Length: 298
Image (cartoon, rainbow, N blue to C red; front, side, top):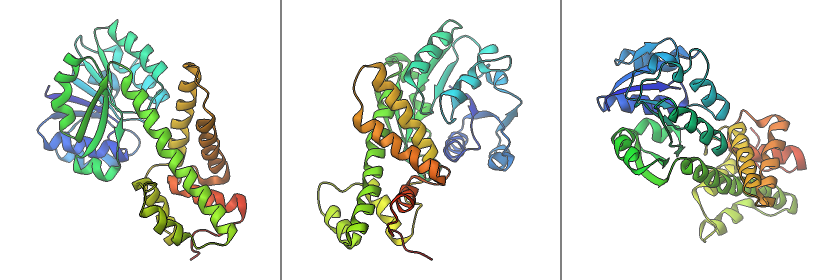
């Protein structure tokens, strides 16, 4: 595979992926969204601009790096969607965090047109995207995984083949549920501790020395120094992912008491005006809810 199409190159994650594909010698064609500045360096480095997803249909593979299910469906469908002009044998690599039910429907639609849809959502941050050191969890048949693995290696450090089609998106939702449970629990603990009058730095010391510690806890702990950039993931995107997770739990008939609580914590923070901030703004939401003073004031 040498001819790669790309949708979403102007995003924080997409830019790094596209940059690394170019650096590894792939011929890259991309659609350009409203943010032309975000892809100017890619075009200068040799990427080819196309007018719409349909024009990527002749590529060997097309990578989608968009927000979620509605955006993936829009990329594939419609008069100028990718499937309107996709060649037989095309592989579509969906790196979004999407609903498994939609992924299954889209995969069937792709198969009917001789196209293979692979779910390969991402983990880590835009920093690792720029370095070509993302993690990905891939749902694909073994022979398809073998074909696309060299492409994935261009922008990933760790590649996990987690099962057949659809398994990647399920694993990603489970991963993000656990991650946001840690973040929302930490923000709540900070609020309770602040209202109870204890030194929250002592809590950080205790957690840091034991099994409860994690990179996510440390990212949230940076808010105690006024740093809300420890986890560069938009809160509204996290809220979307938890909605997908609770929907999945409902579909498989598993009660999701914790999942619903985490989802509602994120929804509350968004309603309090923090949706476009990074996930550590859960701390700001707790301050608004409780009157606790957690982060230092300028």
